Structure formats: C-alpha cells, structure tokens
Length: 378
Ligand SMILES: Cc1ncc(COP(=O)(O)O)c(C=O)c1O
View 1 (tube, protein in one colour):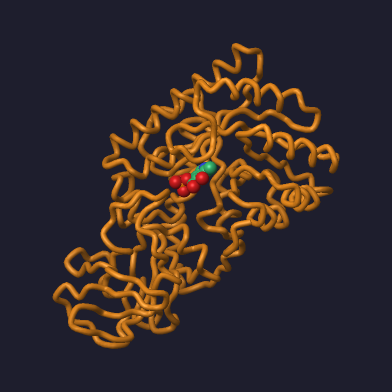
View 2 (spheres, rainbow, N blue to C red):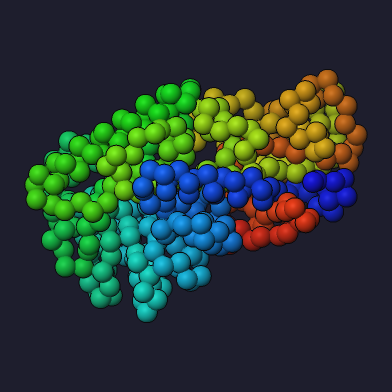
C-alpha cells in the first residue's frame, strides 16, 4: 500500500497511523467487550483524538475515559455524552471548569476519589453548581499509585459518605492494574488480571454486605484485558493503549508487532560509524523506555528502513535520543542521507501526546487527523 511516493510526500518527523490496523484494534477490543458482556469505555489519553473517539463510539463504546480535565473538556465540547475522569480531581478551580462546561450539555460526568478531601471538594463544587456527579472509589490493586488497598476500612467509610451525599452518585469501584506492564508473559498478565478481578469482587461484596449498592466494577489496562478470559463480576473495561499498541504489550506477549498501528517516520540527516542520525529525537519519540517507572526495553524503539518496515532481517534499534536527534544503531546496514526510517516506539501514548497531528495511512492515500487534546496535563 505504501509507496515511495507517499513517503516522499510526508515531511519528517511524522507520527504515522495505519488505519487498517487501528480499525482492527478498535474492533477486536469492542468484540472482546461484547463477548464478555462488559461495557467498553476506552481511555482516550492514548489517542487524544476526536476522530478516533467517534469511531470507538460508533463501534459501541459506552462512553469515554480521560485522565485530565483538559481532555474531558475537548471530548465533552464535541458532544461526548458520558465521560469518566479517572484521575482524582482535588482542586476547586478544576471542578469549576468541568462543571461550568457540563452545565446545559447534559453530559454524564463521572470521577474517581480515594480520599475524604477529594470527596469533600467534589461534593462542595457539585452542590455549588447544582449538578450531580457520579463518583467511583479508586481501589489500589497493585500499582500503588492512587487508590485504597482492598481491606482498608476507609473504603467502606468513603463509599458511605459518597452514597449519602445529596450531590454525589456512588457509581461503584474502579481500578487500574498498571503493574501488569511488568509481566513477562501472557500467562503472567492473565494472573495479574485475575488477581485484580478477585480483589475487586471481594471489595464489591464487602460493600454490598454493608448495605451499599455497587452498580459498577470498572477495571482496565490493555495487557490485562487482552490476556484474561475471566470477567465475572466486572461491568466495565477502560483500556487505552490497545488502539495503537507498542513494544510494551508486544513484550508482554498480548500483541504482535504487526498489530501496532502507530509508528514514527524519520529521515537520516547524518551518519557516522556507529549510527544513522535521524530527525526523530525525544521530542517526537519521547525518552520513555517503559511505563510507570518500569523499564526493560532495549533503546527507545525498533527501527526499519521505511520500505522494509517490520522486516526482522533489517531491524535496528533507536539506541540514543537527544531532543531533535535519534541515533539508530547501524547494525551493519547502509542507508544513505535522506533515506526514510520507520520506527515502532516503546510507548505510543506519550508519542501521540507530543504530536500535533497524525499522518494517517489509508487505503486511498494519506489523511491528517489532529491530536485534539495534545499537550498539557491539567
Ligand atoms: C486509571 C486508568 N485507567 C485505564 C488506563 C488504560 O491503561 P492502558 O493504556 O494500559 O490500556 C490507564 C492508563 O494509564 C489509567 O491510568
């Protein structure tokens, strides 16, 4: 499909999206959710794109998940009707921005909390704006980032406070097993997912035994949902990375490199004995070598001559990055100045965040899609 001509048209560095692979990934995840009878609420922090969000909705997603208020605003202003902000919002000004934007739109707003301060500020702002907010209690199932550990007595107390608050609607419990990215195999990832499921069902049952209704049990991390077959007790999944994939789920064994939809196109701008020096450095490819502080990948991505993409006999490694230069180990190959190199990043989500647009490779040629919610973490 990809001809020399198309590559020559594209100025580099460019973030490429293979539309066929993207759509296959979207369909596969919706199919998985439908097969297991769970709602799919994709995490849009990966793509930050209205076009991709609309396609997910068109395939049957129940709503969208975001990490930041800025992302929420982009999607709600586009008319997305149900949005979960899956990172605690504890500042009044952010609440005011969110609630002002949802007013009169009828957007269903859902958020997470894991502290009494978080519940309090949400409750106050919701009351001040006269708008009800759906709230999940975040459970820490092993990443040890946000959330309360299963068995922590504050789970029952906070859930009760949310449930009893006139302006908060207790939606249930929510977790993210991000530590699954340390799994060394599909079986390891399935074990992490099953531990998460059991922990969440136990938390749900304890709340039910206390007389609190728990309408939803929401989980979601791409390697975990792709590895497991067991979803009993789960009502919703929130994977994000699955749309593009990258070397991380490939290393875990839950995806093939040929499933990865996002790549970076670069040009060889110089060369020396050891390296092809390209124009894709850390400001395009990022300097991520893992997620959540977990490393384990060699270099910053795999690299191939553009017209030998994914040919394992022509594989090279992006060994070093400075801001605007990426150093690809020559590995005995010869590429001339001006040649195009196509890279599979270690972690596609921050690559998308740094881009302003995607160069989308379609069956008819190329299109440009904006990264609507790129940049910023507020
Ligand atoms: C709270 C939460 N839910 C869901 C996800 C989606 O995870 P992944 O991108 O691994 O699918 C993330 C990712 O960081 C997250 O933080």
